[in-house]
Image (cartoon, rainbow, N blue to C red; front, side, top):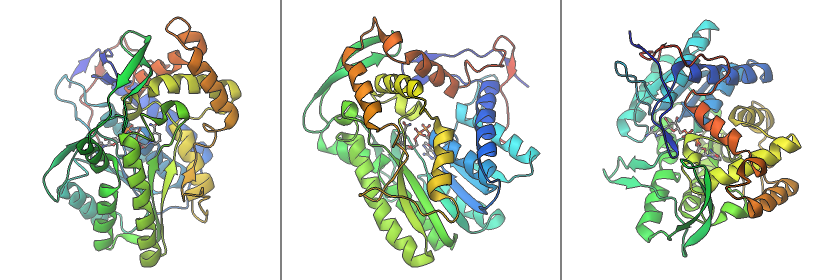
Length: 397
Ligand code: NAD
């Protein structure tokens, strides 16, 4: 047993430590929201790939606690080692497992590289042995690297504009300063690599493996998450390398939709979600400043949501049993609709133009951004005594 005091060690957009009790508190809040909002039943079996953090964790919680599903999650998290804390996702799922067990629910996790053939096989074996056919498959992986199991080539994604360099404002997260940033355009190999990592290749491989293993229930639905965003981030996000990957993901959804309709009368859709503070989004240049402005505007207008509120709404209005997903002209679900409202965007744009280091705290919700960022790693949660040593060697199950 290893009890230690854990403090945040933050380097730019990464926190090197995680607090088990804080991560647990974060998860309990989400479970509370999902339990209150959901019907409590209606879905038999679900698989969530990328289940330990961000939108995937909120999907798992919505499915298990809001809709009574048995959920198998797949993620890639670092276990604790002696006195060294594990990653936040490890502690998030440890708390999910504990509360699922307490309330008689079935949640299991396969921790390993979901891109690898062995990772997929472990999931297939667990589903066959203990779950059965799937009603829902959520694909919510975000990562900077992927080794393609077919070729053994490792690809690294980049966050760059395409065609011409891009100059904008960004926040230096270590210095809390608004600074100019110029990012040079990606070369073709970088665009291709980003599509390989964050496009739809791996999602399609999962659906193929699960189809071959006869694990798709009648009417099975699969969803992956995308983002569009405003004019402010257009050059670095939707028109940049990550946007190309999202174009590929959305094109993959169309192919998978045709396959699933024909095979099991199912659906494959992309849901365009709201910009939120997660480990993945914090790493994108310019985005933390946009999110800080967006949060301020959406909180003032009373239409702010977090990951769990977004996922509750996704299943309530679009994906839940008997619901027909409402799609835009490109075939996508849009739960970024409140973010993209004209009044919200006009105000965010206005603030974007005037924001400086000096007025950052009044013009934006940078304080809220920082707090949520730390909360992702289990810090700054109400009711947690950070002075006390805490047990870090917590098993996943
Ligand atoms: P996140 O960083 O919070 O979570 C990523 C998840 O992927 C974790 O569970 C992690 O363990 C898992 N993962 C990473 N590599 C893996 C691997 N090799 N094998 C298995 N699991 C692995 O990310 P997020 O922000 O929730 O992003 C999830 C999806 O949502 C992405 O497609 C992202 O583009 C999309 N999205 C995010 C936002 C946002 O603002 N955060 C908005 C819209 C859409």
